[in-house]
Length: 274
Image (tube, rainbow, N blue to C red; front, side, top):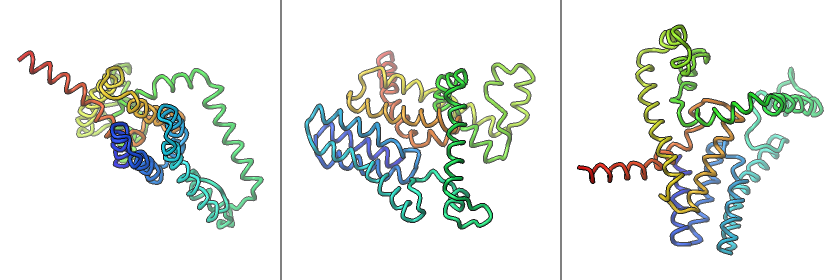
């Protein structure tokens, strides 16, 4: 969160002062952020496109150089992993798979062709799950972004309490008496108090985010980058883990900041009325 927030602050200074140091600082922050939370490992792609757009508007070479820094970090760390393990990757291989690849696990060691066959099967499962099952894919595209904004952390709570994941908040509305009874019986009282409070804050944040997007509350260039970050994490949620508040965590400071224009407007209207 800190590194993303720092990058946005540096971008603000660059758009205001046009200082080269600020666009470099922004991308250094992004490079450190991807080392901290690998969900950003592919963000160098939209980031580079954004800097190419800024370069087309400013014709400053430092913008393109700075935009390539996150890609340099990802490539350098993947190269380091290739030297250490013999496999060019950033952080996608789990410990069990790594033991297989390096042969340090004699019981489960496999050769490279068998690992390639395993990866091919995994890719086929991915195609089956997200490409060929269009109704489910469409549902994920339409519904999962709402989970990112509105989910009050149910997934993480269930993980912490070692509870089953089949308790869904939609049962409160559509589950009938049996669904509501199941929901209330399975979740402790303190968690039941916590969920509506955080849920209300999430609704406030979503309203503030929409107000921020559709009003002239920030410069166009800043808003485009803001939406790129939000869209990237949404895509990671849609095609990755769903309903987990930890995937929203890097965006939390940005989402909170985005409600400031709406709160300022509401405050001004209240003061004018009173």
